[in-house]
Image 1 (cartoon, rainbow, N blue to C red):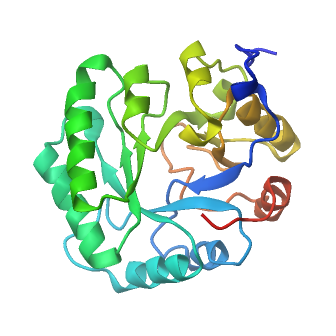
Image 2 (image 1 turned 90 degrees about the horizontal axis):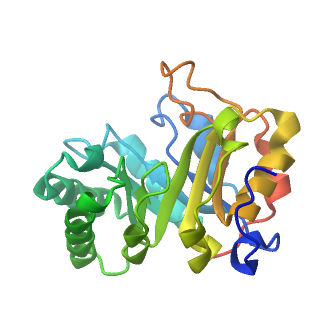
Length: 249
C-alpha cells in the first residue's frame, strides 16, 4: 500500500481511538443544522474550530456565542481559528485574535491555521505558542500546516494538521519516519472529496499513518472555488457510526 512507510507499532496500530476534528462549519446563520448536529450527545468529537469572520471578528457575534456555549456545555472542546498566513501575520495580531476569542467565546484553545512548515518559521511559531499559553496555560493548540512540517514543530503544539487536501492525493500519501516518534493523538488529517464507498479505506489510511483526529467529507473544493469544510459530509451518520461513540476529554 502506498501510504505505509513504517512498520512501527506506534503508527501502524488499528486500535487508536479515532475522533473527529471539525475545521470549521459555515456561520451559524448559514448552517444552523450543522451546528445543532455537532452538539448531539455521543458524537465522537475531539474538537470543533470556531471561525466567526476569518478570525474572531470585531465584536461578539450572538449566534457564535450561542453555538460555542452549547458545544462547551455538551463537553466539546472549542478552538478559535486564527489565520497564521504562513508566518506573514505579526505575533501581535495573532495574540490579539486569541485574546478576543478567549474574552468573547471562552474558547478552550486555538487552531493556528496556515501555519509555516519550514525550519525558518519555527522560532517565531514557538514564540507565538509561548504567548498563547501565557494567555491560557491549558489551551489546546493545533497547528494547521496542512502538510508534514519540519519535525521541530511537533515539540511545541498539542497537535499538528499534517494533511489537508483531496482524497485523490490522500490515498497515495506517505508519512515521514519522524512521525513514528510521536503518538497518534499528536496528528490530524482533513480529507475532502472522499466517496462514500471509500470511507473505510480512508479511515484505515489515517490509522496506519498514525492520525487520531480526522475529518472526512464528500464535499469538494470545486477546483479551489469553494470551502469543502463549511458543511457536514453527506454521509454524516455513517461516519459517526464508523468512528464510534464520543468520549469525554
